[in-house]
Length: 67
Image (cartoon, rainbow, N blue to C red):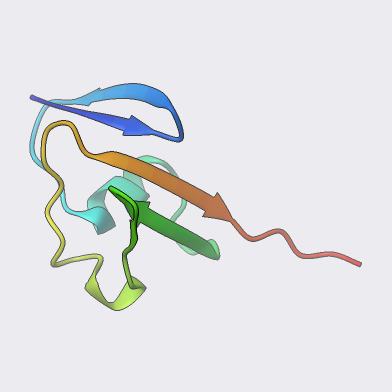
């Protein structure tokens, strides 16, 4: 089990995740998002390669369109 802080909220997950799996579990798949892990932006092209660790601090920003 790992514990992550996501946008200031503590969440627990039963298995280690990569960023792509986290995005899927948070229902952000297909949305325009920016994701930061421990203060550093994670490029979308690396989502499947970046493994999350217990205690990581994640910030997710969802782009909203409109006019």
